[in-house]
Length: 322
Image (cartoon, rainbow, N blue to C red; front, side):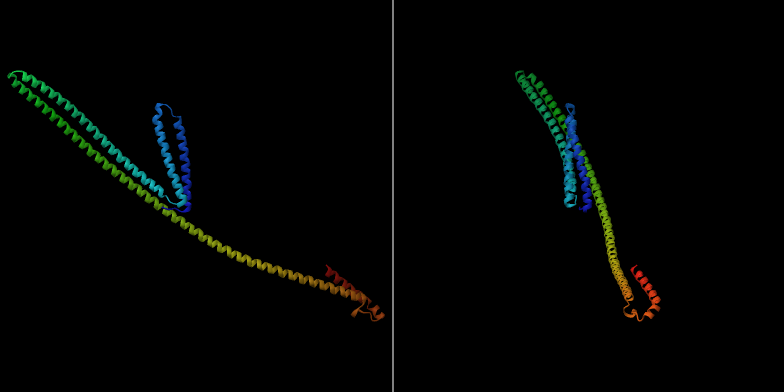
């Protein structure tokens, strides 16, 4: 089972937090174990040491899962750990059952052995008594033969009764053991059914989690696709805006060049008009060209006209300078 990079990083962060908390819990348990002293605190120490070992094993599994998520983006080690834990539980249950059965059988065999030893002792005692009686009977007269036979018969009957009673007790014990064995088999079958049902429930939960992860992965992929589409659209818009900006920048540059050209032309025109006005002024003042003096009379008559023309030229020169 594999995850995406983002999901694996999120799970790795959560697992890192869990490992830190487990380390803190292990340290607190070590401090408590060191504080516990005295004979009454041995059970508490044993319980705390067991908890510390469990914390260490869980932290090791979390570290393996964290490294696997960072390297492979999968949780196969977690599934392996779950399967191993289930197998260990099953093996421990089987061992406990076998151990209890063996203990019960050992106890029954011990009781039977003690009973047999007791019976052997009784039989030895009885044989000794029989020997003594036989010796006494041999010493006695023939009158005691009948009594001897009667006693032997009574003793044999007693022994037979005892043996029958012992056989009956053994049969009863055997029946009780069979009943207990049947009950243990039933309990074992019930436990197996319960474990199978629990395993099926865990499998269903695992399938549900897998479906949820797949749905989440599909949703994230859809979101990623939509974000990619939006990004491409934004890039297209950006390229279009850049193209328009370049066109507008080109237009602005062309407009600036045209304005520069117009300014140059206007400056050239102004300079030309200034030069023309200056040249006219010089020709008028010096009387060159068409402004040359023909006669003195004409000059006096046209004196007023020339002054008027000079004034006009001076005004034109001032305007061009301004």
